[in-house]
Structure formats: C-alpha cells, structure tokens
Image (cartoon, rainbow, N blue to C red; front, side, top):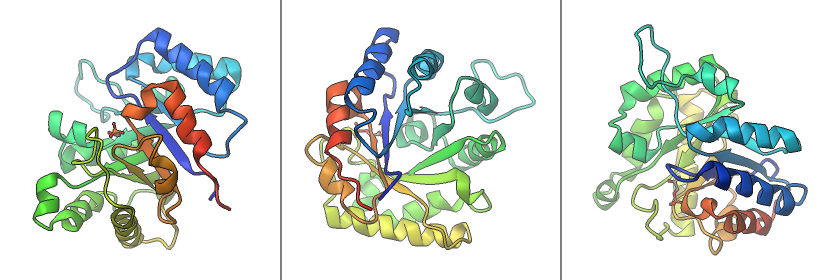
Length: 250
Ligand code: PGA
C-alpha cells in the first residue's frame, strides 16, 4: 500500500542536539530508500528547530505535534494553538493519546474542542483510541473504542486518520495478536464509515510496543495503514530499521 504512515512519537524526550542527529540519521539512512510517509512528532519546544533542519535538507519528513490547545477567547497561559503549530511548520497533530487522556484528564468534551480547533487550522489529525486493560478484560474494548470514535462525527474526512493504541500495550513490550489487531482495525474502519458518513477508507495506524522485531509483520496486515511508534522511535537506528524493513505493498 502506498502512503503507509510511520509516525515517531517522542513523547517528553529528546534535546536540541538529539533532534539534529536523529534527522541527520534519517536523511542518510531512510530518505530516498522508502516509499512510506514518515512523521516526526518531537516535543513542542523542538518543533521549530526540527522544522528548520527538515527544510534545510528539503526532506519529505512530515512534522507533527503531540498535542494542541483549543482556541479560546480567554487568556490561556502556556497554551499552543493550531495557528501557532502551523506557523512552526506542522501539518499534523496527535489528539487523544491515552497519556493525555489519563495524565491530563482529557475527556471527550476537551478532545472535541481540540479536534474542532485542529480542523479549523487545517491540521491533519491522527486521533488516538484504545481500550484499557480493565475494559479488555471485561469484554468492553469495542464499546470503549466506539465511544471514543463518536466525537469525530461531522469532521472533514480528508483531515482525519486514526491510531489504534491499546492502552495496556503502550510501553509494555506486549502487543495484541496479529488477528486481534486486524479485527479491531476492521471494526474501527466500519465504525468510521458510519460516523463520518463516507465510503472512503480512513487510514488506521497501529501503536503500542511496535519494535524492530514486530513492525514488519504488523504492517503486512491489510487493515493496518501505518504505525505509531513511541519508545522504538527515539533511537534513530531502530526507527530507520523499522522503516526500511517494511515492504510496501501495491
Ligand atoms: P510505545 O508507545 O511504542 O512506546 O509503546 C506508543 C505510543 O504511545 O504512541
């Protein structure tokens, strides 16, 4: 498949120096060798720095933010809105990552404001959904994800993609079986067709303990249109191995 997305989510890691060496490594080892769409999501404070380096080399590496704050008429100390992200060279934004949902108490009401702000500024959204361990054990995974997806209703199809990230897998070194990933991606795709009222195939990336060892087999599933990678994206060698090991299917 063309346009397979491979997204590096650095979370709260890195430094100016590491951003520079990571992009340099990408340029020398990945760019020109693959047909995927690669995305770099460093912490917000390094976006400008990353953008300058990416632009200076004319790389096809897409820049994304890990979050945004909704537009507001009230003064918002510390806030970074979609307009600012565009100004920093971002075309993409992650919304609804499980760490934002749990650590920053971002519920559906807040996330809807973020989604609306993102599309207003024409940022492409990678909306993260996933069930907790408890929901999985109680057989409520599908229901939990459908609730998370509901808020996408009415948003423009061309600006939305989804990342399925089971919360119990993120950073734990454990992943669902290939069959379960496939099954959940199919459920999400079907649900999105009805929520977004479209026959279009919305891209769904998988995230949660993606590594050099499992990336290729996950990417071969028909229902998987990309990978969202946390821990394994920090090291430029692992990230480039993941990207270069993936066989793009036409
Ligand atoms: P992980 O994180 O690859 O370290 O599990 C993925 C994510 O949280 O996006």
